[in-house]
Image 1 (cartoon, one colour):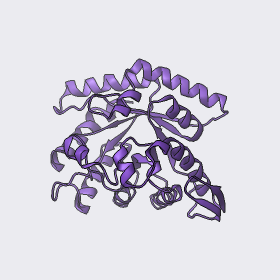
Image 2 (cartoon, rainbow, N blue to C red):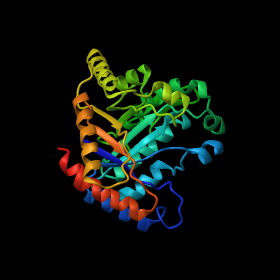
Image 3 (cartoon, rainbow, N blue to C red):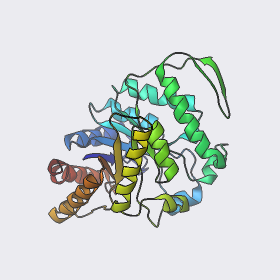
Image 4 (spheres, helix red, strand yellow):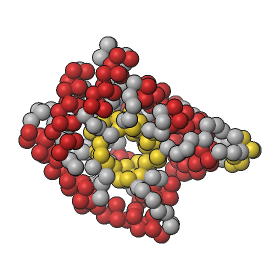
Length: 302
């Protein structure tokens, strides 16, 4: 089992997280704890009502992860998730390729189709075309990263022999988010991994409807995806990632054992990665949790 930890660069507490000193300190802590990746989400223009109710701030994931890359040496840089329909796919491909090349091949490009209608409207994107736009972007990004000229007439653009650079080798890993059957098909066809989520009452209606209900259901869907990949003739490494139900605040042996039991159940279902969201009421609290998780969970999970 490998782990991706949220790095709270979106939190705007003055002096706590959005400084170079903070990024360097948290990056070093994550690597010292042998956590395999850190992740950031994507909300260019979230709905204010959502943001001030139960939402969360978000910095630009590509820019912020570039800062993390500059102060670390081995941790993977995970977008969790970039909403593909928000941007022209060549723009997304350029940002991802740049981060992949300059970080030495450390990007995991977690992607999704999005769910916040008001954010689509603010960005001038048709919410009802988000699925088709996501599929289109996945095709175009692979073409952009392959090197050479690209000709592709999309829904809102027309490339006639344009040549994006750099052409990253290896290409970034793509993990497709979402728990629906369409997301599973998309991951099988285009992805290097699948990253669904457990349904929860505080999520949007779309997310509650398509979220995973149990570890048993997760195992069934993993088997479904593996069968689809075999039908498509797709081989090679493929990851399955999902977040833990638990957010322990007491850094106790009992809390660690409970997490280890959950991760063991995940592994038996076929999961290869799990993501965590350490408490971050302060930077010191975040660092303390990361150190504990590294000693009590990461070191004992293999």
